[in-house]
Image 1 (cartoon, rainbow, N blue to C red):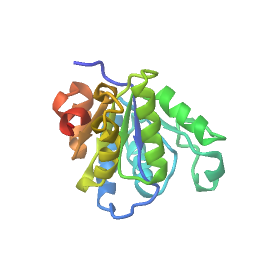
Image 2: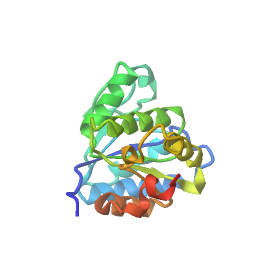
Image 3: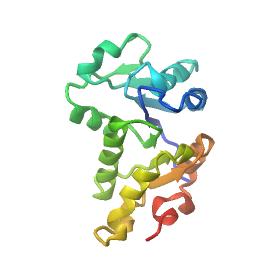
Length: 196
């Protein structure tokens, strides 16, 4: 059994897209994590799926919420007082550095280019052993299958050892995330699920 994480980093879209129904699940998940004593860090947005992280976390009286908004998007930051910590990142690079430093685990919900960028940043740092923190891809309705295939493509082409992906996990349901983090099941690793 691995030591319980202090901080979950949740990456997801600032829009709902085709995942409107997912919003309530992300809300409940964020609230549940807070009630169990976890801290949460996210991009700071208060709309779309990201907004459900914000609202769900604040619904717990035990919440400890850190927001890391990008300086150019401050107009989207409607309420600042509800955060326990707020880091205003002047560059996207600095924003990712804060996520990497503060989080103990990264959860990849459906999102757009920002989420994809953050995922690959965490992936590269793990692959080169600059951090040792799990990445959990939440593959709702197979949304992230192209991303998973792209991640594994260098392994299939013998350009990368699959051991470099040892910290990447794939689940299909939100209620599998915490157990995946705590138990790190081999059968949930990307290298096991998508073997060459």
